Image 1 (cartoon, rainbow, N blue to C red):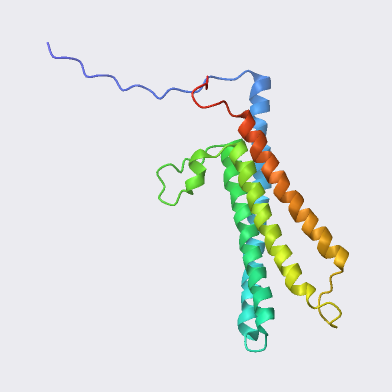
Image 2: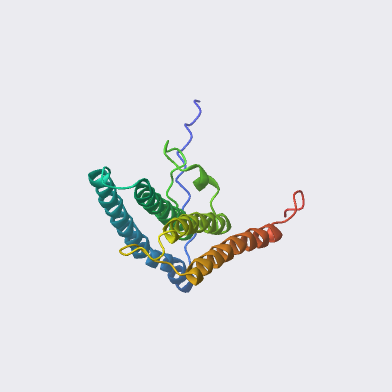
Length: 191
């Protein structure tokens, strides 16, 4: 008597939800148009980046060093906002809508393997601080043009307010990180 070959096991199906929980859980797909809209916004930023890069290349010989620095800071700003968009699109979709199943993909972002709502908040706060830093640096550079016709003019109050807002962003990020740390169980005492 020969042994019978093992029967292939069927994939285990997830348990069927009752109607109300199924509707509530399924409502997460309402976020899909939001993430698709952010992808369109990403395209707008890519277009803006190329437009500014062309502007820099076509006027490089006409610009002063300060003007080149301001355009380059603008390019960096666009890249940082684009990075923020990617974190929100990929991390938000993975956290709140559905798995992307990128575990074996060679281009999977390193941070995605341990993303959750808490990590995403801290990464977003850090990105916002980076973007705010670029804006503040541009303001400080352009503030030297006070009273020059045709240049962006900042009042002393405007520069101070921007600095205060940037400081609030930093303090908020520190607060988010601190609260997140308090919410984590101490090492060795996790349940």
